Image (cartoon, rainbow, N blue to C red; front, top):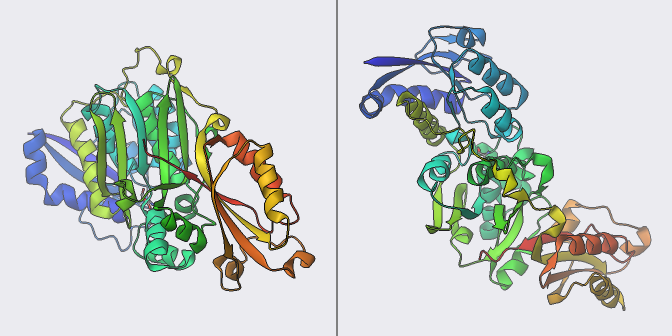
Amino acid sequence: MKTINVAIIGVGVVGTSVIKTLQDNQDIISARTGVKIIPKLGIARNIKNKYVNIPLSTNLDDALENPEIDMIVELVGGVDLPFQIALKALTNKKSFVTANKAMLAYHRYELETQRQGTPIGFEASVCGGIPIIKILRDGLCANHILSIRGIMNGTSNYILTQMSHTNADFEVALKQAQNLGYAEADPTLDINGSDSAHKLLILSSLAYGIHAKVEDIIIEGIEGLIPEDIQFAKEHDYAIKLLGIAKKQDNELDLRVHLCMIPKDSMLAKVDGAMNAISVIGDKVGEGLYYGAGAGGSETASSVISDIMEIARNKTAPMLGYVSNSQSLEQVVMLAPKEKISSRYYVRLKVNDKPGVLSIIANILAIWGISIQSLIQRNANENSYANQHEIQHKKSQQNQNLESVFLLLSTHICCETQIQGALKELYNLQEVLEKPFMIRIEQLT
Ligand code: HSE
């Protein structure tokens, strides 16, 4: 039987699981590929306390320059070093498998150009154990994709779930997510929406062939959310989720990551804890919802090994789903300007409780052409999250001496330019005590 020797660069939780699964499930892996796949070498920065029974080295070239190694599996994390590893692997004609969404978000098209036929697999880069890459590239490839909407980050979904179901503090829930191993080494990427954005960019390349960059799209995280927002959402039959959204309208693609209020009875609203789920609507197949573990050692290893096996079968599809000499889809689908996005919006304002404030605010919204759909007032008392955590500096000592309240409102549909302009103007008011907080209300239709 033909053999393929694999070097695993990065022997952490996922790397260890890849090695063990290749060994434990060798029978089924060989039966399904007709190839014996051997984890030959592990490369790690520190080779102490690694519980794997294969040779280990700290020298990358032991894998990258080794003629006995056929395939490189990169599980390092970060952007620059993994990109260099990928380039060297491809130069040396070694197949390359990665779980690294950040690197792909920045360099996927360079890799596609440089690989010159050498296979690249990246199933594990998006939503860990959910085979969403193969779903888009293979399973749904006969469809025009109308939209992709998903919960693509387990850490932030875990935090939102804990805050919503157990009234947990943001920091406490984040600590729990870190202890459970969901968060990135730097959880900022989970919390600020970047991790979801990296995944969304990869998916939209597959679905639309679009060359969007991280800096081209709206990326907002879950920071700043307080219990009053969650309460408002519940009272209006919404759940709050961090969604990655790609929506095609005519020939423009609306791409963004931000908190959304979504109908509480929708399937996505019921995805709790660290789980991920992605809804894809195809023009022929309709809507499908793909649900599963977005992180975890054996779950991510399952996807990594599916790439290794696909390459071993020698049946790889084009890296980003389009054959290289096909007419560029850029001519058909263009990234929609951020300003054109339209939505309903939820807005939280912390204001002085004094006569005339509401009319000043309503007037600014009216000037921007924004119509209020509902509005309630809540005490912003000493015990509120915002006060305890001093999440924004109060504007003046004088204003501190007045009673303050939260105005929680939702709007009818308007566009991003209108709401951003209005929020900026509202923040400049003496009577508005904190930076306004906004969540887009997504109808999921
Ligand atoms: N840190 C990611 C998450 C897992 O929380 O979803 C790996 O993509």
